[in-house]
Amino acid sequence: MKPAHSGTVVSILRAKDWHLFIEMHSPIVPYLSLQMSICVEDKAVRALIFPSPIIINSGNVGQFVRLSNVANQYLYRGNALGRFWVDEESFDLAYELILEEHMIEHYMEESGKQLFDIPLTHFIDCHIPLMMLAKNTWKADVAIEYLKELRENGYVDNQRYNLW
Image (cartoon, rainbow, N blue to C red; front, side, top):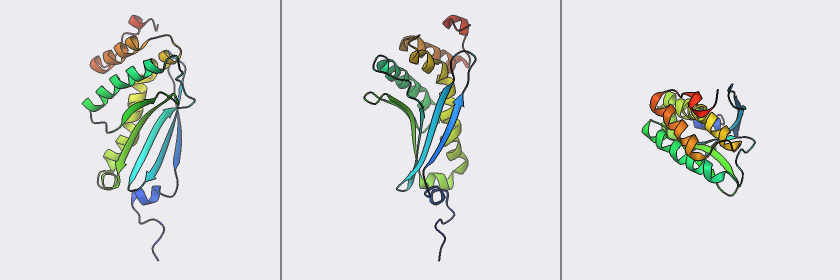
């Protein structure tokens, strides 16, 4: 009799859903608490990374949609397979990624980057803009300008944004 899992990554993960918790800290804005949910759906792994608790409300949801759209433009310029999205009814913001079984089995190192390194790097880049939008300190135009400057230059002059 064969064991419950065949030794493949997807069959091992199938045992249950996985939930990871991450706190991102910054000396400039409050910490951002993220939850990551990884589950197997059919022959793929689905990962969602999202702020917990929710940082969006009815007054700022449109600002988050605009920022997410710009953030996605930068994701696809690189090698990210996931995307940010905002649910305007539930006020959820998430980064979602679906990797098919064959990708995970044949490209384990790249799959690890796609599941962990890439989304967390993008959340790190978006940490200050997300928290400034959540506090209603910035509007989307400023958050987008900040993110563009960071992505294009590799750094941001925090004084320009009154962060120091």
